[in-house]
Amino acid sequence: MEIGIIGAGRVGGALAIALSEKNFPVCLASRHKESADFIASVSKARSISIEDAAQCEVVLLTVTDSAIKIVAKQIADFVSKEQVVIHTSGALSSKEISFLNARVGSLHPLKSFANPEDAAKSLKGTIFTFEGSKKAEEAAKKIVSIVNGRFIKINPNDKVLYHLAAVLTANYTVTLFSLSQEILTSIGFSDEDAKESLLTLVKGVARNIEKNGVDNALTGPILRGDVETIRMHLNAIKDKTLKDIYIFLAFATLKIAERRGLNKEKIKAIRKVLNG
Image 1 (cartoon, one colour):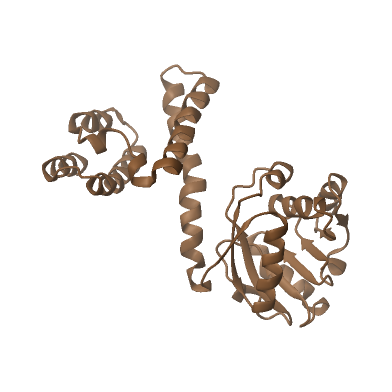
Image 2 (cartoon, one colour; image 1 turned 135 degrees about the horizontal axis):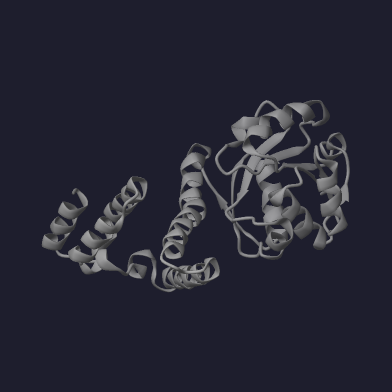
């Protein structure tokens, strides 16, 4: 089974490196040929044209969501019903490319890809979600097995919610980290000290979730029912957007605290403070 990967960005590059390192035949194409050439130079993948990649037994479209349908139309005349075409969008289903005369599917790695080379080394254990045709599923399972990932099949109608969950954790963790770092630097921390201090916290939280589960990993003033500390936080926030973020997250966190057994009087008192 030869795989043609179209799109030499972070996901396409990582898969090309990881699969080719397992001596799996991989061809890589990109509208920016230099990107495919670079990945080929650091892996065993071959850099070829988009048209040639489209004629491989299995074709992976690892382009941006907005480009998937465009690229699918570009290769439509080069694929046949004997081939498998799979895109790697987290939000879009295989319906996006259902017009192709091929067996289609979508396969998404639930992972943050900072750069192709590092991501390729850490694919082991990564969850890959799939939906699509039976033949596409067989090809996807083989790909996931080769990179030592975990395969989970989902309903195509659930892809947006699936992607929403990924964005809340992967993207907005970065946003919250950035907001916290800005607060620490505003009171005299260096950028590096702020980053290292918060990284220690984040790593500890991740370990606690892994070891104890989400609800039991929660700590802090809301879990303790510490109304005065919450009031002090709100009084200290001068930026309206940041205050809104704090309040929305506090209400969400209060639900966890309630499940952990925080008494009704303290819950009522916290709600009153948060409501202003």
